[in-house]
Length: 281
Image (cartoon, rainbow, N blue to C red; front, side):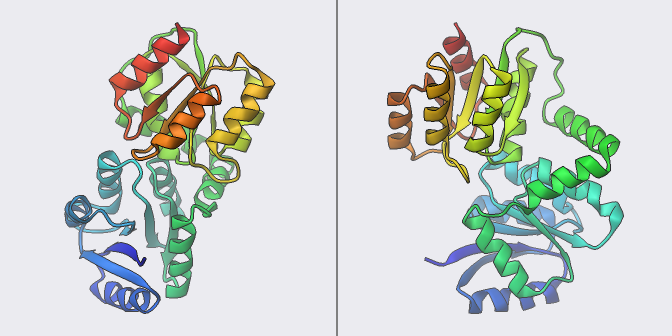
């Protein structure tokens, strides 16, 4: 089955060049947008497998389009692109926090773009997480400011304390941020975040949280295997699984393996809080 791609870029010539190359290599270009507003509308209509999204576009820029697409579909797979500039690193970091799965800088060879597409769709891409780590080490103050602004933008409500400590595990930085904001707004402390099951197990050993929220589908070690390892370490561990629609069998298996409950993506704040309060008593 061919990959369905939406290309959003104000440079019509680049769009045409990239489109022709990707079609020759098995991709189906289901839409083209020259501005962010059109990209958002086309995404909602077409639901492509992946979006190639330029940051600099008229009417609505790529960052705003990214936020709107991710808000409508937290599982959206988006690769952002921009011109080479040190000043743009802050924008790229923000894009990753909001859910961009990978990135490239112009000019980029079309075969390089195709490799990125394959990596993102097969969940093998690690460049976004590596860049985020680099940026936090190179520009710690900028990173903290961007993270604070991103959190406030996603959920500006004031925190209150419950004293309960939670570890959030999901391979999507945007999904971790989304659920963390829901929980922090209701007074829970997010003591750690993990991007895969292997890291989640190590953090559980170190942090001993009151509860773990565990995504089912992740690279390196999936949520099912991580659940089993955590329960082997601590039979009293409280783990809530999160899954996309259509993973009913996996949810049932996780409950049989000791998960206390589950939540479905896209997250609904009321349902998340209802489950957390129930399992924590």
